Image (tube, rainbow, N blue to C red; front, top):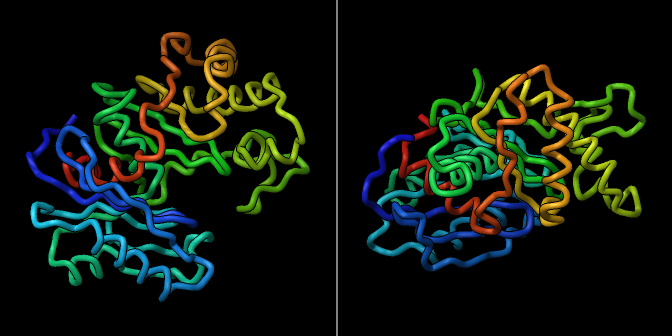
Length: 282
């Protein structure tokens, strides 16, 4: 993994309902953690003002830079939030530049799934691993990819949308993105609610088929899974470890650990700061 500077970074995690902030040091220690309501439904001007408020209330003189993570689509290379569906009115917002101008500090912007993946790679369950596939399986499914110690962005900064990989293109279940049978539509918290009852075998079968494809594609050092659905715990992980090797051509799949994420609610704050601390996204 990249080397770290000894500095304090303000980590900012922008979500649909709340903005989490905290000051993060090079050991992933978080101080001054707080949350601020996003007020996303009130539109761009109000929710952006909430972001500035959250930063102002957490900023102290020792902070040398700001790392921000937000839901996609966004372009981390240009620092522009493109048009996230759960932040109404946020279209082509040059958030990194606006924050730099407002606070006079270096600011980096990253997708929230990528940021959480970096947190796990730098400080968490995947520490020391060069290639990581991370997924947060909650209301939806967000993911991130670390290759050779760095976030993989793809050509346009839009890579790692693993939740929108379909495992059944003939499915009658249409994802919010418009594609039939995306894993997000079939195995997220929303999918569990729609099923009416938790069926551990069915959820493990669906996630196992998806992760088998991920293993065939990436051959990662480790798979790290977080989010509310994975709080079901070890029984689900055990099932996945048994199923995934059966759903991939990779003959080494049973050697790839599938582990629970170390970071929970602070994943975004730590990950956003890690983008600055490690330089791993650039």
